[in-house]
Length: 95
Image (cartoon, rainbow, N blue to C red; front, side):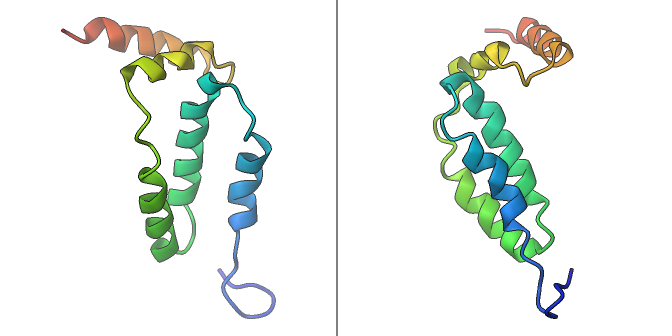
């Protein structure tokens, strides 16, 4: 994608605007928010930049574990349908 000046278009502003606005979210919003950012980064038009950005961001996902994922049940951005699918998936897990 080319910019009006002939160079490559830099659309990082649209990727990070939503992220920067939600920095002060409660802890139970973070996993869903980070997943959305990871998806946005992976869809960046320049594949080389997208790969570097997703790789770098993936190093910061160490905190995700089964216990923290349960916070998604309190996230208003997760639909009721998604929450029902989560319950079904949890019931299928053995152990």
